[in-house]
Image 1: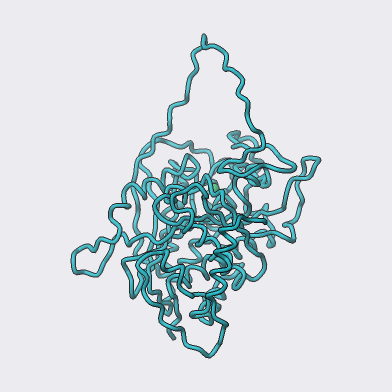
Image 2 (image 1 turned 60 degrees about the vertical axis):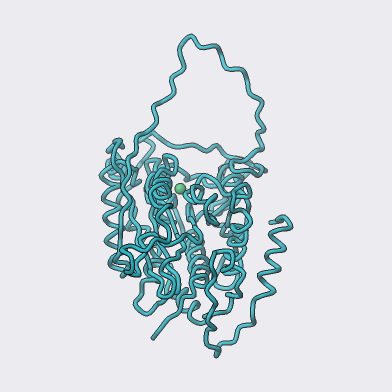
Length: 422
Ligand SMILES: [Zn+2]
């Protein structure tokens, strides 16, 4: 994809500070930077290369698929239902079994907005001239499009057992979401946040949206929690709830915890309940990149050969320059460590759990396609539909999600100076 000059200049700057790889060389200590910005200016690309390859090798397709399959036993995991709460319990048990035992929950209240009623005698709305090529988050819609929307009709789910599993309606009230943390051994007071959302909608299994991102985060928690892996900085693995209603889970986290950053508690304990945020990386819909819809309204049946991981930042956010650097750093990590699919960088991150963070810290999202101009144009016909089921996807689809996992794992491993100690 053609991108604007600041990104290319940053890419050149990052590339020019990379050292050639030498396998026998011990990882060089990296001076501790005060901020994420300083961190990204450090030539990290070839520190601990051998260890990072080994960590990436601990991800595998079958384990990733099994984790997605495990999530789909709870149907669409819609927020405010027993199946959503059961899925949170299951995710927490999995994280603990991986060695990420310091699990915690964020508790908040969710009340759905009242439907807007127009009085019967209201004057007809004046027609609004709309630019039909404008995509959400910025950018432009181009080429063939399909209709998008949320399925609310239970009868469109052909699988009767799944229809029954998804039957309980959402009730307003208390909500929870779970996270666990890899504590850094040099800078426990600083962290990267890696997220996906565990709730879904549409009367399917929310396998891709967002079982694929949830499983990715869980797989990274597994690899980083291995007893022989050490990181200088902390990493938090967060599985947001209420994404589908408007990012309320991620917003609750920011509201409750932003002011706690970097505070040692109890004093002198060396423990930091909320390490300072260095960056936030969201994963939402990771698997399906079959390209643009065909002109006749059908979709290509296979993952396209040129499928890619789309890394987006938001050009209008307060942290846009630093977020762009983070995005290009992830792109370089993908080039080096992802086995099958390349990455592209875009500047229109939108409608995702990294949005509430984007004016506070560098925030990016990884997806199967650009959210505004591609997913928004109907490039994923399973989106919020009964067909978003495990059985819909082929190994070529699952493998795109695995490549996103390889991308984030290798990038975060470098940013936290991760090593394997025998
Ligand atoms: Zn989603």
